[in-house]
Amino acid sequence: MRVLSVASEAFPLIKTGGLADVVGALPVALAPLGVEVRTLLPGYPAVIAAIKGTETVHRWQELFGGSASLIAGEAGMRKLLVLDAPHLFNRPGNPYVDADGRDWPDNAERFAALALVAAEIGGGLLGAYVPDVVHAHDWQAALVPAYLRFGRLAVPHSHVPATMLTVHNLAFQGQFPPSLLEKLHLPPQAFTMDGVEYYGRIGFLKGGLALADHITTVSPTYAMEIQGPEMGMGLDGLLRHRAGALTGILNGVDTDIWNPEADEHLAARYDVHRLQSRKRNKAAVRRQFGLMDDDSGPLVAVISRLTWQKGMDLLLTALPRLLAEGGQLALLGAGEAALEADLTAAAARYPGRVGIVLGYDEKLSHLLQGGADAILVPSRFEPCGLTQLYGLRYGTVPIVARVGGLADTVIDANDAAIAAGVATGFQFTPVTVDALGAALTRAARVFQSPTTWRSMQERGMATDVSWLRPAKQYADIYTALSHRRRK
Ligand code: ADP
Image (cartoon, rainbow, N blue to C red; front, side, top):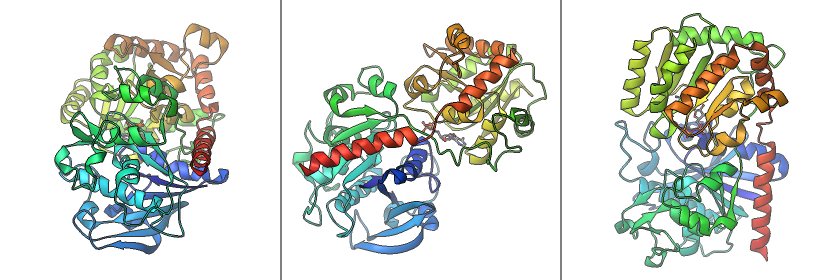
């Protein structure tokens, strides 16, 4: 089984969020199942610098305004195809926005180019390499099925692969003015309700949702939620229409990278039998976040993009409830300027109790998981969420909103669950300041009972958060799709 995975980011080459973790980890998890994945990525400087064993396998004189080439190579265990189009991708920093945080004005062309090239490869551009399935991730890759259906591909279709689209976050849809249609090499017949047209504009994600053979999203609960108006972000009607081809598959985590026994970013490594070693990590966290040495309440960590989705404004208002129980907050994040300012002010207001580090710091995120008592994820919506999974693996008890993948991965410590010995964390609903505050209080009270807390840590660490099960689910869908295509 050959799968071409297409995405705008992949760990460890380029990452802004969970999408990269999934795109990076899935190929490694699928290999033992006989699925050979190649990943097509844009040739950002960081990607070009990281690939090894390169060979140019195709050239274009002109691709969306400049010359381009397709480079085959490897990064670690991952086989890559990289679209080296300097006029589109040779820009440092974040893949989507300029230094001032504004979307690049040519994002439509940049990611249309990525999808078009994926469709070309799917159609047989590389001759010897023909994927059975092209698996597109998020809006940046979502035009693949549209190009296979409507595009004037350079090579005549010697082959039509099956297509799959995974939605990592329905909030990012890639909508652009209809005047771009021709520039994106899409014919007028693509601009219909069954194609890429979306309320008079071109919708990249919408087109993918309408045309892909199969759609997945990253948790079963999110798969249900997005079929309703509250979380459907305007696409719930289409998603209900496609419900028969929509599956929720939970993300796993890369258990080699996220392994407290071997994590080189920790001050002290540990396993479930040596949880006391976490104290050294906690001390290191406190040093880095300027927190005082006081264990009267739990040290709660947040590792997050700072946006409305992530509920950081709710946290700011609920914070006194945590502090009243003797708790502390260590927050690592970057995002909206107003939230960054408010969080900075909170750290100044509660010195030694609230510490924040603004920015993106992979190493520090590992240390936080290895040292904090709890990891808080108060999202208003959350397709899967990864930090609570890392928390389970690291014995960092998750406190989460009961939405999306957070609902599917944490077992709430209600009285029955504690009595039955199955609780792994704390959930709250609805996603309000009050419910969040109550959950923080509840967690702080359970923290006062070290045996209960410890057994929750142990159960979290015993939870299977690996890619084993999800990889099998992806492989089964690939198989079903490619069989259907052959018939
Ligand atoms: P999303 O993809 O919506 O941002 P996820 O929870 O799915 O949320 O994934 C977030 C990923 O990014 C996790 O791997 C998390 O550890 C990481 N992350 C988020 N913010 C930061 C940060 N400021 N520094 C380091 N890692 C971060």
